[in-house]
Structures are given as structure tokens and as C-alpha cells.
Amino acid sequence: MKVFYASTAGGVRRAVFDLMEAACWSDLIPAGVDVLLKVNLTWDRLRPGVDTGPWVLEAIAERLSGHAARIFVGESGQILVDADKALEVSGIGAVCRRRGLVWHNFSRNPWKRVTVSGLEFGIPEIVSRAVVVSVPVVKTHYRTGISAALKNLYGCLDDGRHNYHRMLPEYIAAVNSAVPVALTVADGTVSLEGDGPKPGTPRRTDFVAASADRVALDWSLAGLMGFDPASLRFLAACESRVGTAAGLEEVCLPPLTERPSFEFVKPRPNFVARVEKLLRGRAEATGPQRDGPLMPLLRLGARRWYGFSYTLRGQRREALEFIGSLPCGPQWLGEEEGR
Image: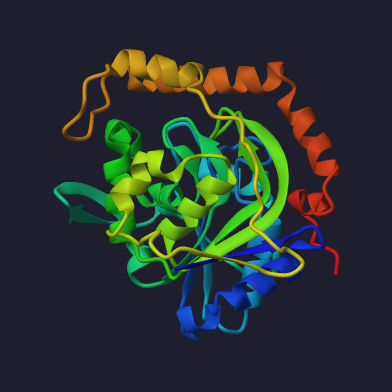
């Protein structure tokens, strides 16, 4: 299976256009259908590399314009994240208004129950009537090692998915089996290393990657990030069920001559994750856990901790300084990419 790479150093829009053409996007997405762009909105605070970049999303939407009927942008809330707020903080809300895209908060819309490999869960009803294009951001994740194509679909699980953490590889494989994806375009313009998926360190990496095979794409991206793909449990769980890394071919579009390569700082559990592990225990799970009576209090405490940490570390100031150093940075603040 082919995985395509393009450099964004000369402009995101052109790189995304070239990448989609190389991946034969119009053969994968029939004309006149509704399309759902599944983005990653992991945090409702400004932090480059955490959420899908608006510049990549806007380029994809522009390329689909006139081909697709309606273009939806979808993501769900989390126990610690307001998806509507994250939409605006990330700059994606401005893209939706500018391009006439339809915001679809999974948490506020119908779900349907499915059972895959003995696991029962909910997925957004919209995935059964729209062609899905996944637009993850490339980053580290303390539970899975990396977060990209396959982990992005975890946001298509129902809002109780924090209770699936002890069976994460199994649920990642199950939800990816349940939700067909025509094409994945991974945002590697700004990646996140270290303690992802939230308070890690932004890193400018200047690439986008695409494939019709989520397993092949994640296998390739893991190597790009300095991870051993064979060591990642979720990849093993998805191999041959969702796609395959067998026969992987990495195709680099000019001026790239070879796949980008980095050595990302590896992730570690943060304070909130360590507290959760302590309270929920270490035993292997045979099914989802359940929220206990203390969950509302724990949720409030975790949100307060993230807010305090964000302020104490001056992460908003750091984010704005980082954005100011990027050619496409103004788009994060609501402006369209220069032509």
C-alpha cells in the first residue's frame, strides 16, 4: 500500500493539493456525495500540534469544493474537552464559516450502537451516510506511543470512551473496523512530541502525508517519529483487520527525495493520567470500566489542573509566539492562507 509525503515548506495549500492528486482522491470519493472531515480536537486550549491545523483542513475543503455535495467537519467532546470551544480555539471554526462547512459535534447528534469482536459501543450516525476523510494531527500519545490515522478514529467512539482506556488497542481496532475511511490526510505541519496528546511540545515538521490505508500510514509515520512500529500494540491489533503495512511503499513528492525522519521525544503519563491509573487500578480489563460516584469531582479536578498548568507554564504565550513564527500562523488566528 502506498503512503504519500509532501513538504509544506513552500506552502500548505499546494502541498495538500499535490498530495491528494497523487493519492487519486477523486477515485476514492465519488462526486455528489456528502463528505465528513474527521478532525482531531483534543484540547480546547491553544496549543500548536495538539489539534488538526486549520490550514490543512481548509486546503482539503477547497479541493473538495464543487465535487462533494456537503462537507461536514466532525469531532466529539471528551470528558475533559468541550468540542465546540476547541473548534473555535483551533481556528477550524473560522474555516467552517469561510468555506461554508457544516460543523457536526458528534456528542450533540445521533449515535448508533454497533458490536465488533464482542465489544459494544456507539459511533456517530453520520458515518453511515457520508464518505469519511480523516484529518489527524501527527503527535505522541502516552497511552499508544503515537496518535495519527488510527487513533484519530477513537473520537468516533461514544462519549464514554474514557472508560475504554484499559482495552485501548482492542477498541481502536474495533472502531476503525466499524467506520470506513476513504482517505486519511495527516497534518504534520506542526507535530507534538513529548507528553502528548495535550501538554506536549510543539515541533515544526513541515509535511503532510496521505494514504487510503490507515495501518500503512501509521506504520510509516511511527518510523518517521523514531518509534519501532512493531512495538505499538494498537498497530498489531489493526493489522489485517483495517489495513496492512505489508508491501508498504513510501512515495515522496518533489522536492522531497526521501521520507522525512525525526527523533521525537517519547511521551510519559502526566499527573492526571497517573491519578486515573491509581484510582482505577492496574488489573487487566475484560470489558469497559464504569464511572463511579466520584467521577464528576475527578473531572472537575482534572480540568482545573490542566487550566492551572496551562497558565502556570505560560503555554498561551508560548503558543502565540510559536504561531507567530509560522508562515501559515495567521490562519490559526482566523485568516486565510496567502496565495
